[in-house]
Length: 262
Image (tube, rainbow, N blue to C red; front, side, top):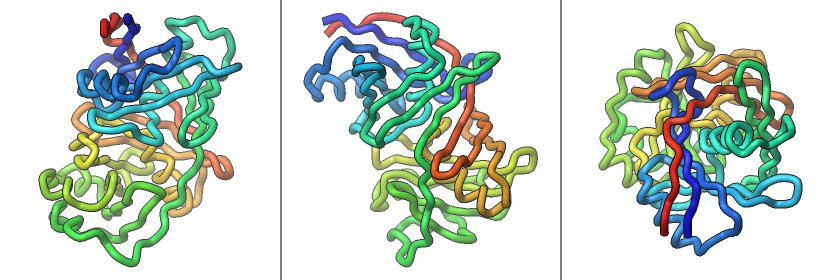
């Protein structure tokens, strides 16, 4: 079997920035064990697979360890491949996923916009054991979205200076952790950690912003927001809360094109 593969830097204005994702267009679904093996071999935070489904596509995402229910940057990368490499004729691509229907719209100057469901984080009564200790810094507040925890600090410098104990953090009962604070040049900044699913730090995390955008929109009293993820590679977002949906816009850069032989 031969499978096309593209590696795309998502939410990136130039190569070697943003978050790299592998994208594999498929004619039909092979066994899930093969999909997981490919994602493990790629060893990127996510590998996306899609198959034509009516007027759109069925889209799935795998980390090196497991399938996940939502991934923003690999969705952006998949849409870029469809628009730029596979000649998708329309301006909007509908994806059916484990998180429902997701839309990606093609805009001007190379921008693509994700349309994802908002995830409003709620205050937590019980903080998972070991969470504070693994970060070594106290939070102003801790909340939880559907799958991930939100850890709020008071300053950008605190987010940038974090040095988590990843071995300890991997034992905390959670999928992932967003650490966030007000930004100096943007409305807010963040970092995202998920060692339990094989990702110590994710460079740029679209799914996290489905939680971050509603939180900061309410906190700052506005629905259009600028954001920056402070990983080593870094990534920038233009975001909007529109009712119960979050819009996130960014660009992509292709790093490689090839073929997998399995």
